[in-house]
Amino acid sequence: MATQAEMKKAMAAAAENGAAQAKKLMAEGTAQARVAVEKGIETANKTAADMMKAAEEAMEFGRGNFEAVTKASQIYVTGVQDLSRQTLAMFQALSEHAIEGVKTLSSVKSLKEAADFQASFAKASFERAMNDTAKLQEAAMKVAETAMEPLTARVTLAMEKMAKPLAA
Image (cartoon, rainbow, N blue to C red; front, side):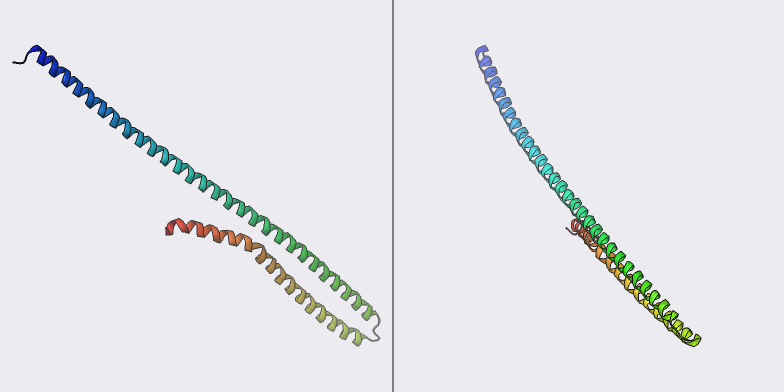
């Protein structure tokens, strides 16, 4: 049998071996924990950077939308002002035409001449009003189309951005 000294020596060796094993396990655990923490920090940093990038893109897109609305509003207001000037000019021209008609009608010599003038005057006034109205409608459509262009471009861009993740 083993002597007490041998047993002490074996127990000391076992204790030493156990301590070495425990030290090794602690070192490996610490290394693995360090790698896990570093990986977690790296992932968190990447996620934060991605979120910042997404926030910046969203802010830039919002700024673009605001600029498009501002531009569309400016185009619309300018167009409406121009339409107002055209309408005023049309009414002034119609008024002048009516005054000329009254002057001419007051200088006719016969009832037949008055009736002929009245018929031609009414026809000319109607044709002029229809022509002017068509011009105003065309100008109004052009204003609406032009004012919508910046907004349409933003909607197209939004659709492209929304479709991009689906295609990827």
